[in-house]
Image (tube, rainbow over all chains, first blue to last red):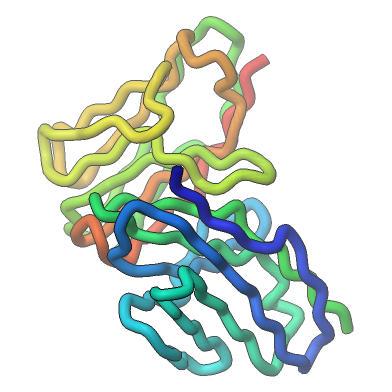
Length: 109
Length: 112
């Protein structure tokens, strides 16, 4: 079957760095997406990786290793507004998105 | 401003009634999707449409129906056959199947 695994919850301190991991097993791979979702709101796009390596976008970076079925989202200089759930989604061989359950990130002052 | 709009944000219905959730986009996107989000679970695909007048079942289509008569609109009907309809419903659109998806604000449906 197809499966996406992420930690359920993580806690970090304002100003620090946090890494949110995502491992996947899917039938085929056409890219991996990260989305941010504040409670009760719509998910918003953060990043897309289809090749191995690190993609940097401001305070956020996303890494992919296709051979390991692994990605992480790195958030630097954490701010209170970064408190949200972070969703990992993989596009499979049919270009259908398989979603992880999301990681709830709690930022403490 | 371009975007995707769902309405209403909150909806209450009695058990046994059908209810239709609205989704409209002015992004000129071909692909549209309906997802259901339940606590502790990933988004689950209900239906999707790649083009006008065509749509496909997702993983949990039973008890739901959709139409795609216009590019801009993709309404979802939750029928009385859906056994556990209370959930947060998200509509999304993307230019094509494998590009960034834009989500509506969601509709929280409660069936009592």
